Image (cartoon, rainbow over all chains, first blue to last red; front, side, top):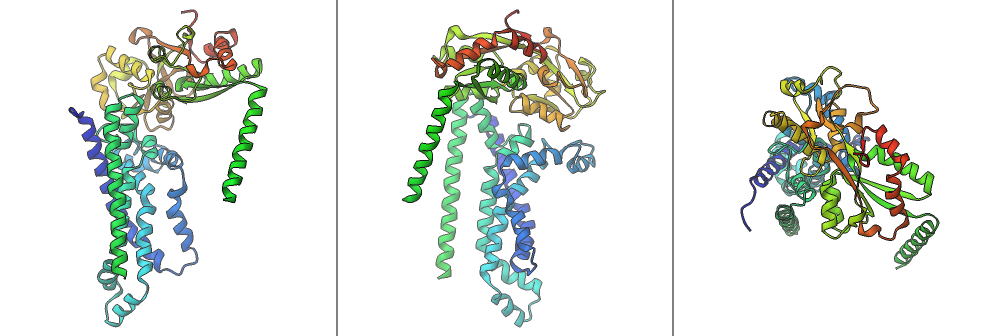
Length: 228
Length: 253
């Protein structure tokens, strides 16, 4: 197999960091959103749900284009960046996190929302009769019951961020250690006919993808059994 | 089952349609290095007017297109941004040796949207910018020329931390155009008809001339339009277009 070039490991580490941070942000921000979507009676809730689901159907180039402009000096990203004296959020790790959060949003919110909805009103009503405050009921009843949804959301959000390519290519600038993630590194190797490096990384991704899907299926099987 | 049948009918219909189109005028698929995008579009239009043939253009970095061609991409003509890849394709047995010629010589420009930023090589020495956009030097010859320029000036190591890399020269330009990078090395052809910003045409002694070679690929053998396109490239109409876009003509140099 020979020695692997060090930039492969830099790319792997960066990708894992990006996916982990993105997943954490999405779990924190996505949970209230999923809760609201599952509970509210507002007539426009499906409109919000549709917006959340948009990254599923939009080509990454659409998001990449908007992000490139929005993160730049003419957009809000440039204003934020100027707080610490920079000009743009493009070409930064932070910029990639913003892009990934948008891109992977539906993959985290949807399973959590489904889990909250599958739970129904009954457990919360029971909690209320036992004089649990809504907040307490949320933490001690709803969250534990929706655990499979959180697990699915976390796995999918992480995996989907690892698999992100188009957006990163458009806003990343291919900087080792900062924006050169795995998928871009593979693209780079292929473009420059470095088949060995490309196939090592691509093979790794195939194994990773298999493990993720297998994990998902096992989680679902366990839930199914628990449900019975 | 019915869906399958109607699908097959649709496929058959499309195939017939394509057949009809092909019978009327020949068509050739041309892989074009990204720096030559605008010029190639003008050339394809002029080509259609003169010969009636269609040149269908695909753009990308020279490295990417080369890789695709080695993997049996359906291109018949290759307009590269260097001499090395067409030469390699000839060696690989994927292109016709005698068809290879330099159709243009490209020029490298340091460009910024800011009208005051670029004054000359001092701009690179002072380095009062955050990001310098180039294209991937391993895949795109203009990126290699940019690196060579900075090395000639002894500034490569100092500037390297500021690099942002586009996958091809179009993206390197786009990073500067959107203002995300203040400055970048682009092809003269990309900014020649644009008076905005400031620029420095890099002196030729700082980098090897970017000789851009065209070659007929194996898939184009016997294709009337492919041969006609390569011939057309050597003609006076194309010469005028190439010069207008800031290239030197490959034939005269």
